[in-house]
Every structure is written in C-alpha cells, then in structure tokens.
Image 1 (spheres, one colour):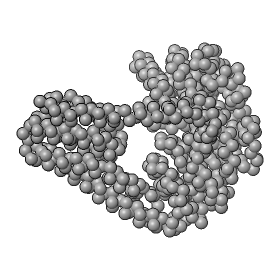
Image 2 (tube, rainbow, N blue to C red):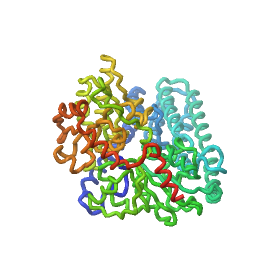
Image 3 (spheres, one colour):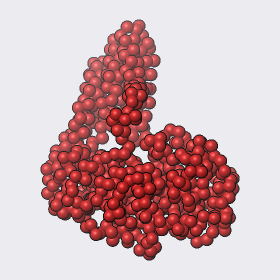
Image 4 (cartoon, rainbow, N blue to C red):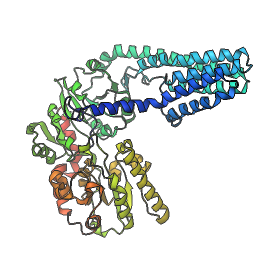
Length: 582
C-alpha cells in the first residue's frame, strides 16, 4: 500500500513503551513554542500601553507598539498568501494597542471626539470576533451535488477577512494617534470594520439556517437519490490523490454513488474531484442519515481509524481498495481483516500477509490488478539503446514513525548529481508529504536548484516543481521516463507495468538484507544508502542504464505484483469484480 494516513495502526497503545513522559513534556514545549509569539505580542502591547500612560512623549510608546504590530503581522503571515486567520486570535494585544492609541491620541494629543468614538467601535469589532467565529462554526457544509439541495453547497463565511480588517484598523488608529490628526479616518475605518462584521454575521446566520434545513431533509433526499454504493474517505489534508486515483473507475461502474467524508478539508478536496454527491458527516451519529436502504457496498481507500464508524453497518459489503501496493509494513496490517473484501493488485499482496505472520482467509482477497496503470506505456526497446535517458526520481516521505521511514531524500542530491553527470535528464516528483518535514523539504529544494542550474547551463529538459508535482500525474511521469529511482513505495510496483528498469534506495535496511525484507527489490538495482552514506552508486547506475540484466525478472514479477490480466482488458477486471457487489 502507498504511504498510509494516520489510522488504527499509527496510534500508540496506551501503556506501551511509546507513551512515556517525554512526549508529554515535548507536547508542552510544543504548545509553549506555538503560543510564544502571541504571548510576546501581549507583553509588548502592555509595555506600550504603560509607556503611553506614564511617558512624557508619545514617542516612548512607539517602539513597543511597532514591535507588537510587526509580531502580529509575522504571526498572520500566512494570510498574505491566501491562508486563513483564526477570527478571535490576538484579541488581548489588539485591545491593548487600541487603548494605547486612545491615550496617545487624547491624552498626549488633541484629537477630536470622533477619534475616541472610532477607538470604541474598533474595540467592539475586535471583541465581536470570537462570537462571530462561534456562529460561523455552525455553518459547515452538509452536501454538494445532491439533488434537492441547490446548486451551491453551504460554505463557512470568511471570518479571516474580518480579523484582517480589524487588524488594519488598529494600525490606522495607532498611526493617526502618533500623527495627532485624522481622527475622522479612524471613525470611518472602524465603522467599515463593524459593517463588514455585521455583514459576515448575517451570512453566518443565513447559512446556519440553511444548514439546519438541509440536515432535516437529508435522509429523505438520500433515499430519493437511491445510491447503490458509497466511497468513504477520511484522511489528512492534501492527500486527495487517494480518491482521485479511484473516482474515474468508480464512475465507470455506471451506478449512482456518493462520497462520504468526515472533515471539512476532505469535503472541499472531494468536491473538486467529482460531480457525484459529497456528504460531510462529522459525528458518528450523523452517519445514520446517509446509509440508506438502497446501499449495497462501501469502498475504502485507506485504513483511517474512522473507517470503523462505517464498518458497523453490516448489511453492506465493505471493500478495501487502498491507494497503492508496496512491501511497506502498512501493506500487511492486520486491520485489513475488518473488511469483507480486500481488492488487491496481484498475488504478491496476498502472499505478503502470510509471509509476515498475518492470517487472512483466501476468500477475503480479490485480485483486480491496478487499473490506474492501464495507460502506462510499456518499454519498446532496451535501455542501452537510449543515448540520453530520462530518469524519474520519485522518493517517498519520512512516514509517521521511525520504522516506516524509507525516504532517500537525504541522499537524493548525490544520486541526482550522479545522473546529471552522465548526461541524463531528470523528472523529479517527491511525495507530497515531503514538504511536512523541514529536512526533507530542504533537500527537495536543493535538488530543484541543481536541476534548474543544469537546465540553464546545459539545456537538459529536466522537469520538476509544479509541472512534475501538480500538472503531471504519476502515470504521466512514468511515461515521460526511461528509468526510475525510488524507495520502498507503491510507485515501484506500479512502475513494473512499464517493464522499464528501476533502482531502489536501501535506507532502512542494509543492501545485503534488503531483498529479504522487501521482495520487490529482486527486480531493482540497489543503491546502498544505509546509514546515510551512498555506496556502490556507479555500479548500480552502470547496470540500470546499460546492460540491464534484470529485464526478465521484471517481466516475471509484473504478473506477480500486478496480476496476470490481459492488457486489453486490464481495467475491466476491476469493473467486473466491483460490479458483483452492486
């Protein structure tokens, strides 16, 4: 299976060695580190207020006030890139700055009453942010694309812009107070901020009413729609590839279905990928509204803990599809036993459980191949006949635990540098989770810089960044390459379909034991990077780009890992098997 989202197997067992006092202390330190900027801003704002109260000049309070504003701007820096700001954040520091502005403008300055009224209105707008945020939380979406619910799904009102506008009003108040003029500007700005807050509040009330209306009619609407099956999905944000790879094939089943998600982020991601109804059910009790009598099957694409909430509906057939197949530990997780059927790519997936001591009855498996590889081009000639081959480097990420860290990115720069030195062009597509690790993210940037510099200097058609990671699919990257370098990952098994040569990087296990632990590596040229030091790279690249002695092994393992299915009906195998349960 591909890189797994947090699930049952990812959570430490209470009382085990993994739950000690150290994580608790680390958690407190993490909480303190997260709160430190806000606490510092509060202290600086208080200092500014005190200096405004006791100082002989308004300039005394200016440095800490400016420092507070700068720190708040840094804390909210994500908003300048379109990210959200939590309405109700940094209320204390902003209220203190408004009080400071009031003292500077009325005690040390000579601003008119309009300034004082403006300060009062601005303070009211800031204090109203938290109630507005609470009201907005009741406007989360219910469904999209379900007949009878309108053409537009319910969305939360934008409370971030309220917080940003209120923050801007605080800055305007400080500037006018120091300049000792333009009190009417503060009044106008504060009035506008209150108007925006009121408008957003009306939006929240209207949408909350509409949400309650849709919720009350939802069971009847789902029953009228008569879905035959559902796709149940819960995962971390940014992992929509898990359902993106299956939705085209579920749609080809030509049956009514819906997508059930458990988080607002997943709802937004799913609605971008399908025109089928998408339903958000945050609590377990809400699931009763969507498991209508017409449903016959539920499909899953990962082992998220919340899958348990749907498994309880025992009249349905529960079918695990996964989002890839590999020799990683999550691919032989005992949690697969809870599904009625596990659709797997080939016999290798079945044998993997027995090889790792996980007892699974044969009838729990159905071999359906990997329909996603149906359009992968098969090699037409030996690699040695290609003068300047293109290499796909597709490293995995660090995993949720140390024992599932198979990423080669920490040594990836040296590997790619060796390919470039041999005249190869490179397609660089790291796992999307790599950005979550600062160390791996830095290495990704180093590799992108290397490729960009070489492209400018030598004109090689390297592909990386947005083009390789967003615009191109994984299968596009397969077809754009002549060879691949990867880690213990599902992309290796998928690449087998192309019959093109590939190398695997041994990170977690010495190369001498690598094939014992990861059998798919029998078809790979091994790059030994155990312990963080690359060894034998030239010899591996000579075989990979030259004689290719493992070509026959790859062809044999292709059937073992991806099913012995005729190419002209490869995806049809999945459609036929899935239809049996519908």
